[in-house]
Image 1 (spheres, rainbow, N blue to C red):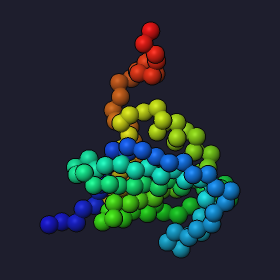
Image 2: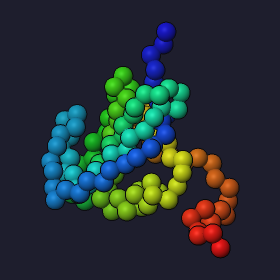
Image 3: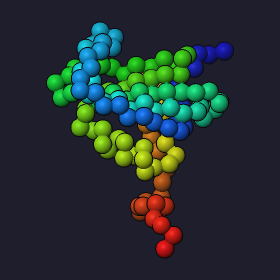
Image 4: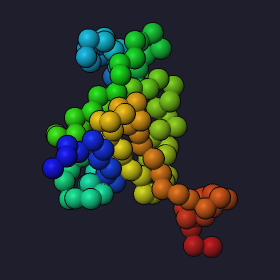
Length: 129
């Protein structure tokens, strides 16, 4: 049996954590963390629990490489603190949302929407007019 290199899960819930400043090391790189969005979900091909932590870093922080641990169904990616609002907006307003853990290409670890028809806008969020 070959080793699993990619895991896809549907994000079912998330938690936003703001920090004044946390300094933490990831694979020898010191990150200056201002915020964290923890995305939890269920595997697309199994019923296992998965987690992707999206760390939002201070402007003066070094940026670690993505961290992927397929065996434990965990991952972490790192973005600028300036991106946190757009990221949370997508989690609040799109469905379904998927996390992709990529051990084969960690830099491709990501959060995605599904294919959506062009021009759908916010009609799914309007009240019943």
